[in-house]
Amino acid sequence: MQDEYAMDYLPIGSVIISVLCLILTIFLWKRADRKTLLTLKGLGKQLQDGIADINLQLEPIITANSRAMGAISSLSDDTKMGKAIERRIGQDLIGQNEDVVEVIRMAFPRVSEYIDDHPEAITKLMPRLNQLLSDPEARKRLNLGTSKSDVSRIWQED
Image: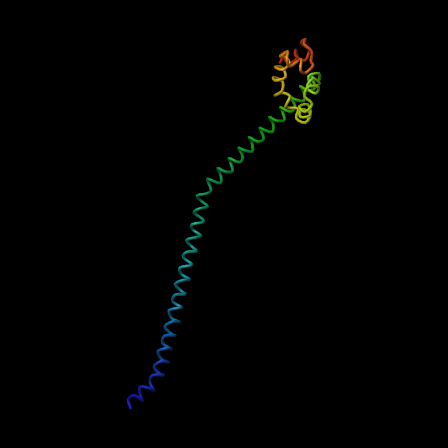
């Protein structure tokens, strides 16, 4: 008979234990949820503080970078100005020494095309042309004659 009573209480006991386990699970779930939210809020605050700290530390670097870029930009402006001056000097030299340019056109047609596009190149070509005109063998190959011409005299003055 006791077995019969035990059989009647077994399903009831199982239901009660299941309900208690469910309540315990919900309680622990809510508690873990609150702890997780508190932890995430704390981490979010730490992250915001860290970002603010990083921005403060980066401020001098950003300022130095801006100054460096400004300096590089001014160097670029100086380079552009230097190239513009070289170009104008080359144009003036070509205008003053057209006979020299004609010699270059006869002897070096590709070089003369480049000089037409880049007049500043004439300043770099002058010493080489002077050396070439002073060499008798080179003058023969270029059919410039063996006597000193006005072209050679112009380059020697420079």
